[in-house]
Length: 359
Ligand code: NAD
Image (tube, rainbow, N blue to C red):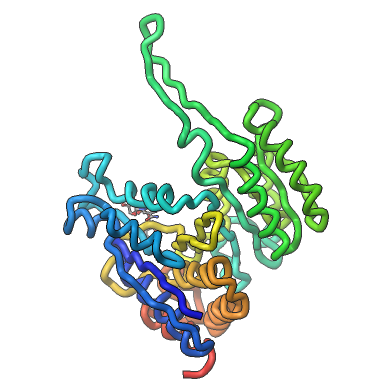
């Protein structure tokens, strides 16, 4: 297969970690006879420095015309004083909007090899946590009308949280389809005891659940979900929820693993185009030192193979290679434990590559 990949390394550790993921993709291409063609696009602070804006129209067009987008991270203290409309993160919102990336998939996996990094007790994490949060990304309160007005001598702020049936249905389908590829268990998170948007959400999900009889479906209130993630996280397979609940719950859930450098994510559109990135930021404190953990980005590239290119075997191989490297005891500084071997960012990339096929 020939695939065009837009590569957006960004700022801070972005270029170092993205380089490792590209190495891994190159190895997959050579082992399986694929051709991956990379186009590099400036995003975030480096784009502000060059062009005065966090991403150019041309950059966005390049992403749109690609089969997939691989992103490092954006931002850093150098650009903190930029006016709000040209801050580095603005570019992320622009790409999400322009590419219509409405579904955010965040796998939360506590690798058994890193179980001691979890802030939860061993009895709770058991054999390891393995769940996936599907978050609606382009609707709800973050995109509804808002205003602050003076009423009776004081300021009153209002944020509207709209959801339409088609928005709920399309994210619901992503969630059910994703559950089918996993342990076939889906919990839909809402606040249907209070919110109209949640009642509509629940009705649409119930209708969809009839189409997906193979998936064991349940509803769960968002406040209970926040508690259950701490109390009994291994009960979950796939969770689907609206934008703001998903924002909060996915950050809570990723902390259960204790290793931010390991966590990948995918943002998908209705076609196969997606943007893949680690969940962490640009880590300016360790940028340029070749010590960052590249595995979150490598695992994001594996998600790209799985979700955008439907290369399931190749994706499995990358994930297994990461597990093997961890089994052998290699660790970057952020996940170092007693008795393990410290390696650099680029050495970690090479180790993953060495477990994928022959050279
Ligand atoms: P951060 O995720 O960059 O860093 C938090 C801590 O985790 C730091 O100590 C960092 O060294 C460590 N860390 C993060 N990734 C790591 C990795 N791969 N390997 C080893 N250690 C790692 O969060 P922050 O410090 O709050 O933000 C720094 C900058 O990143 C800010 O400008 C912020 O706006 C931006 N940011 C960008 C994104 C994005 O691009 N999607 C997301 C979050 C934050």
